[in-house]
Length: 172
Image (cartoon, rainbow, N blue to C red; front, side, top):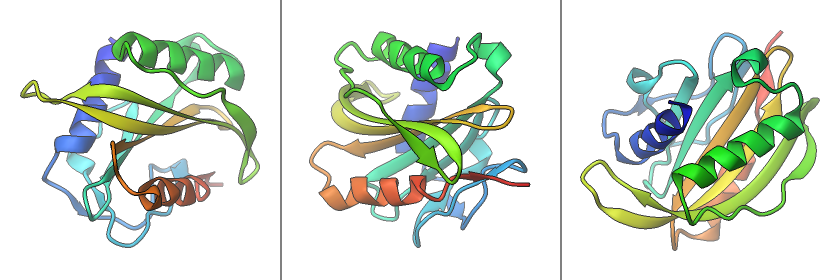
């Protein structure tokens, strides 16, 4: 179920055309600052998915999952990151991530890693995509930020995702 939801959310993030302007906000517990021109698709959000947005040029998309540790049966950021890598590998056979780099984002433990994989759209079209991913350990939740870029997108698209990731914070 989670594997299917993850695949669907990535596809929605790339193919949805009903976007509206958004500046900040993931939900009442967390926030992120989107760069100018990024568009939010609030209509596609349903737990554990809490956010979908797309860059103005359509070269990058961001999907954010928010999960309770007990629901995913892990207690540490390392275990959560490993679980997400395993699930992405099950969904995308050619998913081969870099080793996660552990660090902090605004006082929260985080892990960052990249990969590429072949993604399939609902109409069956396959294309190569690059991923920039970050897992975050919040106070009561884990978050998975999935940045997806079309292969061949300029380095600026990845840099923009990293810039957005650095704004992630829990409120309160």
